[in-house]
Image (cartoon, rainbow over all chains, first blue to last red; front, side):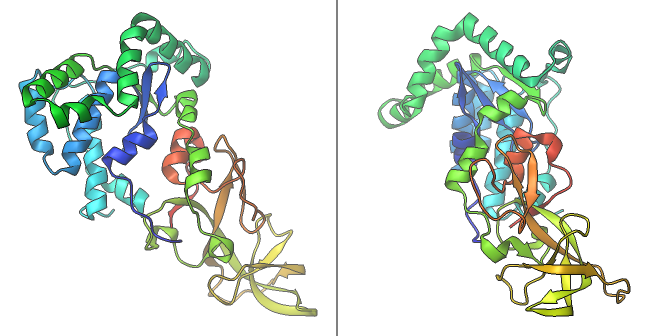
Length: 95
Length: 250
């Protein structure tokens, strides 16, 4: 019953985005559904996680927009990672 | 507590152009998630495996972005990000990707890395959702009744108890938090109950390697890789159908 630190965005990717035959499986931390990602998508998600943990996710979104925008479906997953950071910071909304 | 947060965290609306490629239609052509995930992975790997494998190798070494961040310019990082964005694909497997989810191996990770409540702490009068910890272990709710049985060698002794098998066996709830419930011989639920009963308590649930429920504490006390408590996120990934019916917290 010892409290443990909740997973942050990067730790979530490490645990719930394993490699599978050249692709990657990602578990959405908000909706708990799974997604098959290319290596490029994982790189983007990892960069998003770094930005979230550094508190500069909005700047990262602007950077993505400046580089052609989000691939279909990926922004949703990146935004889902922000919930992990919010939970770690205790700023989430209780039910 | 974790589960409540995750479910209550606001979902953002996405711009209309950011739509998923839902493959639920394709899944109709496959009988099981195993076939489904395997076919997709093998198909995609066959068409672009070389390039992805090279990138994956670099990523798995933890080198690519770190090297860029440490030693190279912002412009180079921007180019890599742009390339990664261009090479990004997302296929939504939904909740049915059982094979995909199973490959995550979270049951094994849970067994190796996590520390669920132990011993008598696997029984709780406190609603797991209200526990102060941040874990989200799956608990089963039990009704506690006024019972009578042979307690400490004294027959027909009244005690508060719960059953995990529809009244065949009865466990006496511990008098002290952290002590283990005890199985009482020749016990029965009293036919006449005070208005305060049944009370509600929770016991930790155990699952096999595929996320199938196998039983509750204290009927199960030995934790193994094939027989372990699970957290909601793991259970949702390996066996989403089993997720309902439990209370999450810890």
